[in-house]
Image 1: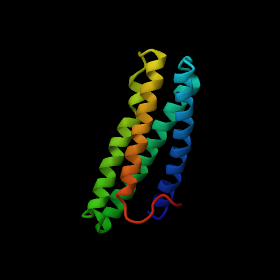
Image 2: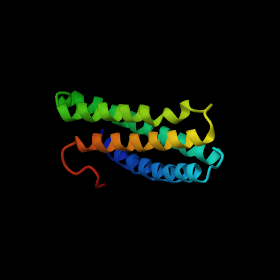
Image 3: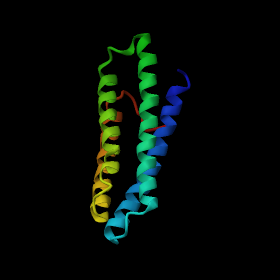
Length: 133
């Protein structure tokens, strides 16, 4: 369990980096009316994959530390709930494969921004400053 929380902390920064790259790519693709290419698909997949990894690490930490008496803490349930919704929202771009390129970029941009907002809100439920490593 001593390894899970630091890994969970490291993965969040990978999510932030990939999300920023995806937001830039999606915004440029939307503005320049580019084709939804391999790079855009790769960034969307990397974002959702990292969100899945983060969710798995978080669930493991939640369960293992909860067995030590942490299940009753309200902020942990709030964090878990917000993050699970963020993971679902982070997967939405994969549902829009049949849409025109412009709509895929727009919807992907909105989905990633919404997922990041949910992540921010979920982290804000935790006590202390969780944005620092």
